[in-house]
Length: 563
Image (cartoon, rainbow, N blue to C red; front, top):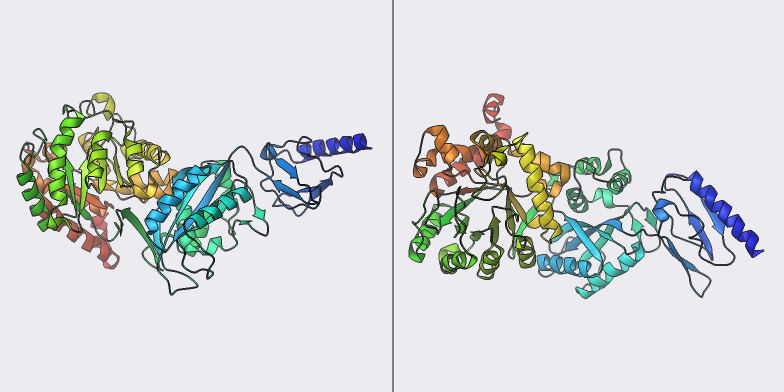
């Protein structure tokens, strides 16, 4: 009898394999005693078979989506089914509105990694108004994408444990909590059980979930799993269309949702003004002001002047990155940097201001961060020091990733100036550097980008970049919506290409040209301008922002002049 049953099940399995040659996009994981039921989510038909022996049926058939299916039988009359492949791609939403919200997120990510969740992408951060129970603090919301070998219910259990470890207790539904973790997607599965529903039935109506979810995707669908997630949207057009139906990008800054950037314990909004970064080169050989600010007193005096003229950020560099600059030792760079950094950090005028350190050396970066640097500005985006990304990931500070080919000695070589479409190529190459940084543990919500004006670029390349920042964002968005929203810095200040255009061989004579190029960049969406002359460029930035804020009321003729 047992032999007959086994043969029957074998033939049934072969029939199912032929009938459903494509991997089923979803599996119902609810069973009666010794019963397994498989169902395609887009079909109303269900096929089931019963094994009265209660033995494993996984060897009878092996379609791709169920290659490592495990059917375990307990000693009681119930059978637990957990369908999983070697690895499933997942999306997890995060929320917090009690305690240090940013620290809560950092700890949650650490615990996820320790629990067998490999994080691959991160959204931007959003500060949102509470819903349902409105008498509570504002939430910080985000989402992450990753892969795991945990089954869906195992994953749910791990996330609940992390919530409890972070201090979450049973309380008012929709009430305050230090951490909230929800599974938005799990591989290609549609799941409905008494403990877990994927996708959540109210996902598509919650802007505070949809905004970070969209960030994890690119406009180009990168794999079959993402295509499946799009197919789960309740309206045609996928996840992006569902976001647009809610209001899309027009909701940001309104409707109780704001995109924010974490620096220290503060959340910055780079959309409401152009931030001015003042340059302090404490080097003997920088192209513009080399040797002027090598002493602590002269550097402090210059910082004081820049802050009074409108600088929001002070960028300190102890290693020249001008063309053909020689590389100094880590220790020499540290010896130059630390006395000035410590003095600037202690200035009363620096309250509410930020300090950035310009270095491509991980040892210097580590020392700078330990001594008060708020931002790490790396002209190589990690290409000149393989340890840089790890140092920044462990530190928690924001990372400015710049595009450059080669190093300062080789960046203007002929081979490094070859581009097809410079904006597309810069966006693609810079995205890959940011992707490496993200996989090393630097979330996209801590990344700023710099297209590298003056680095591995000709005069025409620099002009194309300054005039086409939206194109760079658009190219980034094909791969990652989150990275396309990253604050963009431009740094054309006093650079040689301006002198070539204007006939100004002396760097200090290029301030007017700098203002013109900065103006074009701001009108194209630059969030941060890195300049030597703070006063003139801060004034230009104020005018540009006023124009941008008022452009919706401009006559069409005036608007044409800004395009």
